[in-house]
Image (cartoon, rainbow, N blue to C red):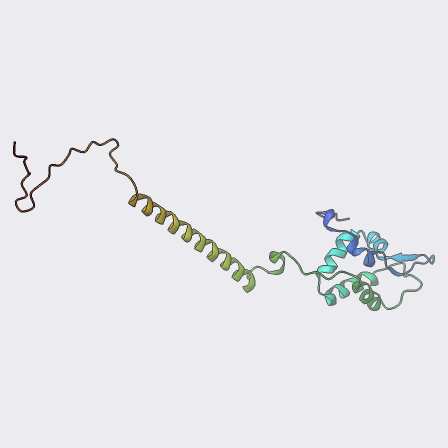
Length: 170
């Protein structure tokens, strides 16, 4: 029997489906879905989760085939398709959250998702580099002199017309 990868994800949401009656066995005892699936060596909660992820028609077909395999034919077994339809209606319908499960390899949707992720990453990298270069430019414009503790000699005033140093008349 297969075991679920994460039993914490499988819970009471499947109870209405799993504990519903399929019919009665030869001894007149009710046969529940959970008992039926366990007798077929299937994990009932995992199988319920798998059926819930399928479209209703596909899930009904799959469950109908399983019900038709009952070797011990319950006494009150009506049409297997009608039973499957009634039971599948009890399953919670939920879309698959994982896009990788939805998209098949080579699927245009998967390619578009991968492409948009790559483009987003490239745009973010480009913005990062532009910001880094911009900050370097700003830092270099406002940087102090590269010669630490440089002493500047006083510059004597010059005469504007002759460009000769002005001298004091001593």
